[in-house]
Length: 95
Length: 234
Image (cartoon, rainbow over all chains, first blue to last red; front, side):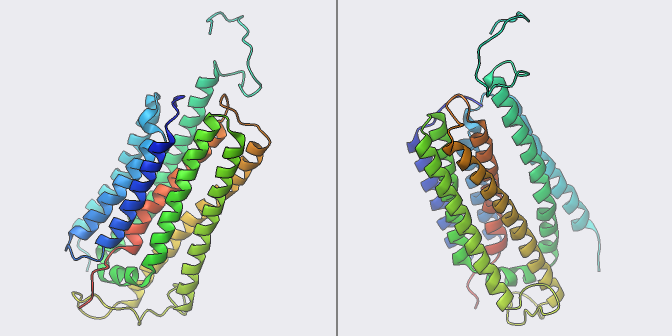
């Protein structure tokens, strides 16, 4: 964690972006994009999560590399949980 | 700081003696919080995994259930949480600059946003109880619209799985919100007493990390529960 104090203007910019993305994701869900509805919704959610982590949670400005290792590891473990479970369920024949 | 073991440095009471300096103490606290959040990701991850598997199996029931929950209240609640995250971020900034009154005000606004979120969530849950969409003996989802591309009737048991996950996931999230409000009441009290200064504001910072994390969980819950299939029915 650094002593870096971010300008409040940047916080307001991120806030407006998050609100805008929320309205966009809700509006786009009413448009028929076929299978891409889910993809668009998840991409927007990930952009929002990234904005919160990088700016509100100060990860962009942290000097502590261990914090970043913990975050990347946590996402990797979650990916393992989801990917290996789905590899099982999606390939098994259940009648 | 000197490497000599007999060096004695003047420091405030906030620095525990087993840390070299305030920065190391802050980094340790922050890392501990991030490790806790990593376990929280796995905690919620189990539910997201269950959601993924059942959505893969029973997509039509999930789409029909998703249509029946109130997208407007859901969107408003997302905005409420985003606003609360802004006030938390500005609150940490106020603590960094030693503005006590501003910090207390922002923490109080955050608590109000948190309670507003829980209130709106309560209204949504109440609607579901009235519509008999709560899994259990009185569950009845025959009123749900069937997606046009689906074949056959909606399976009531599969529909209950969607609503079980809806209540479990939003319930677990709401529990985190309640704990978050508790933490922020604690922070507000000590901020008002003047415990935090630009030299020592770690509790505000890591309490803020927790709040932002709960916000991120909702950022994913919103599209996964509310926006599965909102395409116009024909």
